[in-house]
Image (tube, rainbow, N blue to C red; front, top):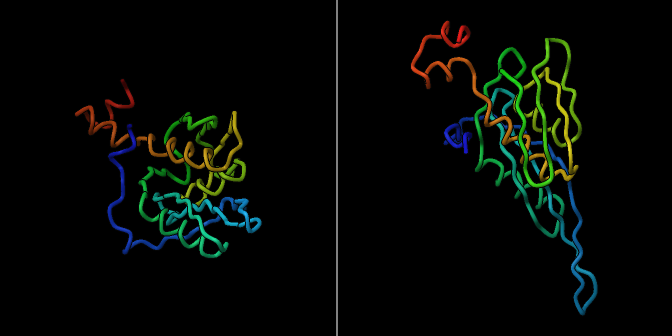
Length: 172
């Protein structure tokens, strides 16, 4: 996977903000009646290029959210954000969800739906055009969006990987 090299190692020096994407009430039928529990999908980010997601499950909503935040802090990825937008177009799939991200000019805003919007705002992107195709399952949308963001590369990284100058990247 292309995004594995941009994992963030430490979380203690980051100021992460969490956003709740979805809460799912799950019912288990036992002989004593129905047992309710909650699953919460949470996205955390420092609004400066770092984002992660987590799933928390517990008997109470607040405990599920807290577990989700802790899980999200364990899988953070670094994303190149250039002047509030992304460097290039990107498509990614996860399960039945497919996302398409396109850079936008300053002042456009975040044109994206619920689960994608939470991820894009958490990473610090202010101008982007986004489209989700296929499944609208928030769990898969969050994973597909983070996969798309982790596959983004800025011009400096491309030049470094190719071993050429920045000017040659834009000419070739």
